[in-house]
Image (tube, rainbow, N blue to C red; front, top):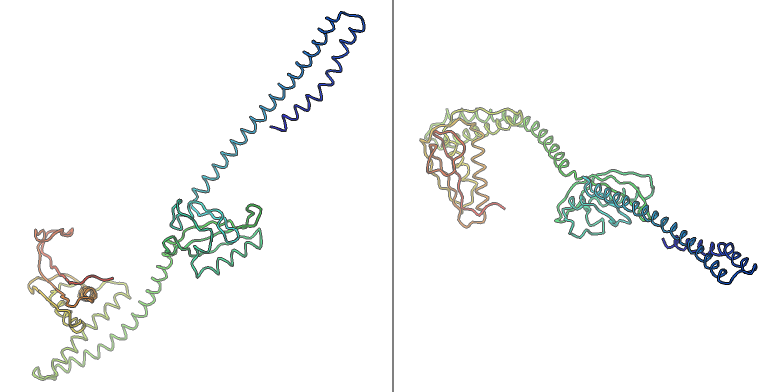
Length: 385
C-alpha cells in the first residue's frame, strides 16, 4: 500500500509541470495583448483550478485502485486462512499420529500422537524423540532415520515399540518420508497404533505353541498309559495274592488307587490333546473330595489345618470325574497360596445339598429351581499378590 501511494505521488508531481506548461501561456497571452489585469488574474486562477481538478482526478483514480487491491488482498487472506483451517482440521483429526522430526527433535506432533503416547494436549511433549522409544528398538529407529535423511526420495515402513507417559509399552507401525522443513531436511512420519493387532498375533503364536505341546503331550501320555497298565495289573495281582491282614496289603492298595488316579490324569491329557470332551457320569462328590484331601494333606504346611464338613447324603451329580477333581485341587492349591503369610491357616471344605430357591443362599445363580450339591473351599488367608 505504501509503495502504491508513493507511486501516485510521483505521478502527480510529474504531471504537474506538464499541466502548468499548457495552462501558463493563457494568462501570458492575455497580458501581451494588453488585457485588463483583473482578467489576467481570473485567467491565472482558472488555470490553478484546472490543475487542482486534474490532481483530484488522479488522486481519485489512485484511491479506487488502492481500494481494489486491498479488496483483492483481503479476499486472498480469507482464502489462505480457510485453507490453513481446513488442513489443520485434517491433520488434527487424522486417525494416524503425524510427526515432523528434525535432528532427532520433535518439531510437530498432532493430537493422535498425544493419544498414542497416553498424554493430553495440556501435557508437555518432550522435544527429544528418544525419550519415547523402547530401548531395544533404538537401533532400528536410528537405522531408518539415517536411511531417509540420506535421500529425499526415500520411504520407510517398520514396526516399533514406544513408551507412554506411564511407561507402558505400545506397538506402532511407522511410515516415514523425507521432506524439507524450514529449509532443512526432516522426516515426516505417520504412526498407527497396532498394539491390539500385535497382541492378537502373539496370542495366535501362543495358541500354535500350545497346539504343538498338546500333540506332543498326547504322544507322551499314550506311552505313559501303557506303563500304568503294567503297574496297575501287577498291583491288582498282588492284592489277590496278599491277605488283607498282611501289612503290605494297604501299600498295594495305595499303589493301585494312585495308579487309577494317574490313569485318569493321563486320560485328561489325552482329552485335551484330542479336543473332545470326557465322560460325564452320575457321581457322588464326597468320594472325590475325600481322595483329594488325602493327597492334599501330604503337601500342606504344618501350620495349615483342614476342617471338613462332608454330607455323604448330598446326592449324585452328572460330572466328569477327572475334571471336577482337578477343579477341587486347584481351589485348594489357591487357598494354600493365599494363607502362606498366616501363622495359622484354616482350610475349610464344605460339601452339602441345597435346594433352589432357598432364602439362606444370597444372590443365587440363574439356575432353575431344584436340588443341587454345593462344594465350598474357604480359607482365612489375606489373598494372592
